[in-house]
Length: 124
Length: 269
Image (cartoon, rainbow over all chains, first blue to last red; front, side):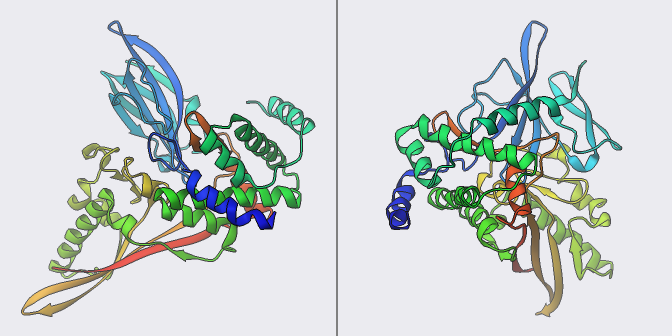
């Protein structure tokens, strides 16, 4: 196996992108659909995005309709609203959607280890 | 997933186990070059198997340890090739650095929107302190007086676009602008501090600031969050590595958490 190291390395330098063929991302975001709802007859979709390599940060994103995401997690349309989950404020107790804007409500005494995927969504 | 169903799933994976493949870099290359689903499945099945072992804190064989080490070394090759040299350096150092601290090139920080804006805000704050004859020798972005000042107000989340600008968190950490793939894959959130001295030049006060950033490279253990790092190798072919598995490597001696630093000196008026 040691004798194959150099050709393997050369092959890998040429071949491995560490990313997709269409966009240059080293890592791709995790995108989870949290909720689909309709407001005034318009479809809206709430997603949770988790981004980064060793240090992950989470974001809730609200879209009109249902966007497509490429290999790197980049959406086909811009979000209506995007909020960051600030773990220093505690656990997110709910996500409030009001007039196409997102607001996070934190429980300062909740564990920041709570999975934001399980958060309660309130639509006003 | 409940603990019971997770245990059942892992027992199934452990029961179906084949040998860990050698040369994961080779297989990752096949995925990238030939869209080989077979190679991806081979690597992913091994990752899933080792994740189960890690969740239940079972020991790894020497082949399994070598496999995971080579996965991280493969990230170095991929990152170098695609221009993510800081993230590549850090990933390789995790498995080859023995826990020693390393230095990152300052450029990746100095070109960041949130860093530029925070440095400018801190400079204005330092000048205010200087004018009021207060100490400004060591100022951190987490300084409560800075955070409460008008200088920091413009960095607040309500005044920023997360994607294009990033923002300053309530504890003084800088969240990198999300469009900045290069920095957020190396250091997503960090504090910055300035050690500042002054001198007089032609009657003007000149400030000399040494800016420093210090972060820890580590992964979150398995928890309710269960974060996963996705490595896209080809269109719709993504390798998924649980962060809990990456963390476990530091428990069993395959990897070591470490501190990484960056900094620069800046002369300004």
